Length: 478
Ligand code: ADP
Ligand code: MG
Image 1 (cartoon, rainbow, N blue to C red):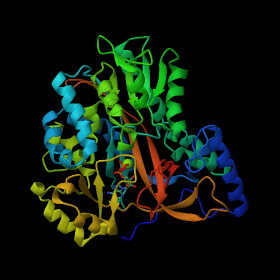
Image 2: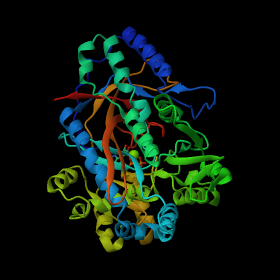
Image 3: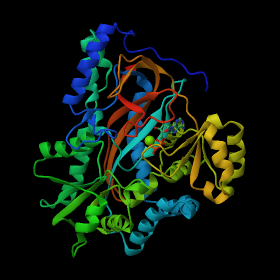
Image 4: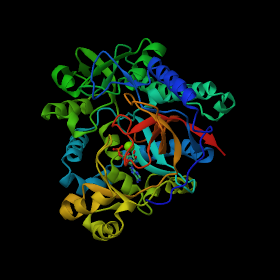
């Protein structure tokens, strides 16, 4: 691995063992009592929660880069909105991928079906998250752009308070001003309710599409409870795609009716990976939702616009001006792109394979999947690349590996025994955005909050729900 810069800590570490023990015990209880929790995968029990892994002290993040990401979000919202509405671009970009990737191909079939029939609901709702790693030169680079089930807005909104509490407990009340305010939860929920208002059917509900078992339950329920508390007239229901297949119908005006309830907004917290579709039934349910007059978050074209292949295509020279007009904005977006490469033969894939095989540690290979655990790193790449056919390669893209600066603190995980030691970690910043509009007109476009996820510096991936990551807050410095 490259030499990685080490960032200072927000406060002097290590802590005295007694202080450490006490503050961890307070931190765990704070987390449990404020819903910074998940259901355990290893010790599953519907009736209990455990705290979500967290970093005890907030990780340093350069203020300038944080603000850059925040200020870029509405431009990225607009970019992805325009990409999602460019049928030719999606067709061209994903043509090779859908030949070999069954999941993307199934999504694409739904897209082509509703295009051919005529799109019933031209408005779409995007609750988006752009993810970044900072580099040792203090220059953020985009890891990926999420257009479906962008998670942790709910729990992350608690983290400014959480770390304020911890810093105060440790005698550093003066430092809490460096924790930026985070209103991701209300921002995301407000946009959902705005979509509900636009439809204007006071009897209709917002439907959350969920997995069979929801481990990240607090994050999801925070959204539901926030809506119910602040907009008590708006009903929220939760169903799996299987439930929608079993109890859903389209009414005479293509209104979606699930379990007898009319749905005006559908918010997908599932449906982004093949495992969420147990049979053709779930695909039928997804198609039925897509055909309906409900506003979808995301609609199928937004889902497709969030694929890794699209991300790679957007990094090709000259492409951005197809979607953004302002030169300054184009320059700013380009700055956050790292090297992204196609493996398609027609797009110079052979050369990319050669380049990657020379230095596999410098790259990440990514399929068209979400949710973590799907990428291929470093020494695993050569075998994968050399054993797949040229066609199969089209299911993946290659990306320069980013080496973020290292921070040090205690990472606290449920069930861990004994006093934790200080570990080397890297942090991934996510900025949330919300957008509503049609192809012709954007009605609503906001940056709404952030999240920070931190993982051990030697771990390839740091998904919190997926297992390796921990929740954190940015501690801004100049
Ligand atoms: P997913 O859709 O599964 O979340 P990501 O593109 O976000 O896919 O990759 C998952 C994780 O892999 C990221 O959260 C990050 O930890 C790591 N990762 C992804 N891309 C890179 C990269 N270019 N350099 C270093 N790590 C990366
Ligand atoms: Mg990701």
